[in-house]
Image (cartoon, rainbow, N blue to C red):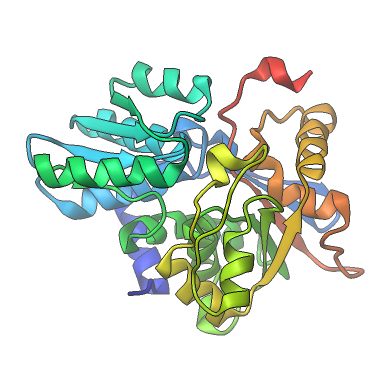
Length: 307
């Protein structure tokens, strides 16, 4: 099970009227930020949600169901509301209150279950089997990954091409989609630098083991990047594309989030700043003249914490 460049192009046509073409900002010569935190529902995830739901055709009365650390649930709830279908969302107890409130404001039925995403996902799977609702996985369905890949497609068109794309990894669906959409999975395209919190190393451990393995997750990025196992599609794409896996500390993520706010007035959650943290901390050092794009992927946070 994998995702192709043609799948991403089809997704772009399918969701084009439903998602934003988010801007790219060149903050210094050759350093670009792709501002997915400005996307509907506050993150890139609405791309995959719309693609999965629209590709399914007619839905059952039970609508759609999803498990999420928060951002995916918000995306599914937003897409469901826009398309006039029912949404039921399962989130772990560690989910941000801001995200839970946002889910309810979008009209979704919210169930807080378990300490981590994996436990919420198990509960959502059981509920989907009972109700027949369409399950929208956070990162390991072809339609979801292809939808996320439209970010990479846009980015390459908006920048005229870059040498490197720096992207955060949780369950890996976004990084895999961007890799395909940017053309890298086809044997060309930019280098992909996949950034994870040191305390949520799903890709790092999968690459070391040669297959996805369960990992312990914690830290400031866990509510959005806290998948305890890399997705199968992500492993297939990212291992074959020979991405560069980079780990960043919680302190580096906090510093990057503050820098995005203080220097550029960008409101991001910690996970949204993880990719930028790789550059600021020196975990990834671009070569002279290298054109680098960093994806800022989410803004669902309490703005009061930026101070």
